[in-house]
Length: 309
Image 1 (cartoon, one colour):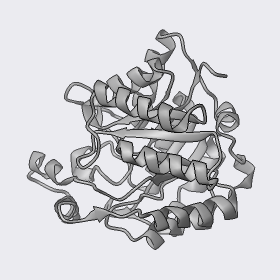
Image 2: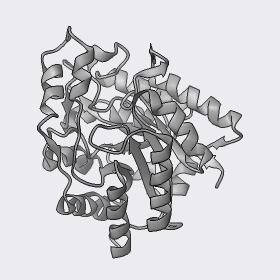
Image 3: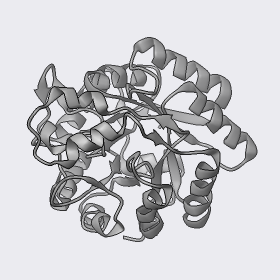
Image 4: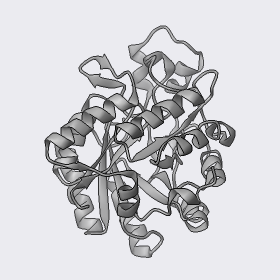
């Protein structure tokens, strides 16, 4: 399976808002439908956030997660990956509430505190569907996304040790890779480590080919042969850098959380559309696409029968 590529699809996230795209799902039924369609298109992993069903505002409420998780679980075989990042405006306790209830196979885990600047997005729009949207974007000018060493260790113990959940380690800069290497050496996490290089968020490393090569070289030096990597690039860099990452031996992540586009100035009409596009590119390059079960074997996951939804 060394040549198989895992496609992750991040279905809705907490960055983009309903004003930015009519295709961004935020109602539970729409999140479930788009997630299942993305899995049918080739996504082996589905990365999921929750939104207020009425306004689309990011929420950490486990009850909202449970309005779509069972439907996705029964509608496809994809690995369900629950965020522990949530939003920079949420506390750690809020961000861990849903994963603690649902005991997923996989969770995302941001490997450090950082400025997480969404406020430039506000400049592109003038008429908002909901009052919360510009307020949330503005708030990121003066809010730090907090994941201290103590916070990270709490996630390890609360989710990893208790439930056997494994992690998509989100590294927004090379210092995050150093933190990951430290915890691998300390024995708090076990190989294979699944590293997501996150590129293009204001406050983290920029989305550029040179930076992807830098991230990969740093991970090679610090993590050796103990890891698999995936590439997440924001906005218009999503497909180009994912393609480059696959050429370098990695896996890929697409989805409306990371980019609303399918082409130059063209909105994607669904998450599945982005999955189909990257799958076509990968297969044209000679890669095979990993099935959900193959992804579970590659990442040593506990299995879909051991979750609580």
